[in-house]
Length: 197
Image (cartoon, rainbow, N blue to C red; front, top):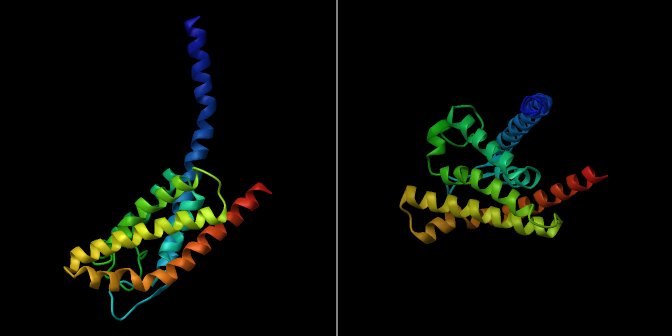
């Protein structure tokens, strides 16, 4: 009787193997595609003369992927993106030093926030209805986390005063971040409706 049970258990495990491989390949593809989207958005960048932090579309991509991906895949995507950049691939904004120097430089806090923000947004979004206004509120919170981590890092890096950090690391980016938050929520709701149709 035990041999029959073991045989059935082994057969069930073998039958699920193709499904597991398919899931891993699909997740790996999503991670690579997501990190590529963040990299493309990083190159849409406008330097500001008074701060080392450029305006980029990176936060938009991070928030959008947080809304569209599961927390685990969102986290893996952001880790892959940072690993690609640390390895020297041209995935960070071109207005920086590149590689580890950029990751640990004055704008590193923004970059290091991504593996926190994307899965956090994903988890929060999946705790209730996935409507537009809720998406805006959640991505708005995620955007504030990115700005806070970036500001704290820049303050520690430059030893600037709190008011100087606020002026150089937070306030200039609020109007653009509002647009990114609204766009990410709108696209996520549209994708969700398309999937249901």
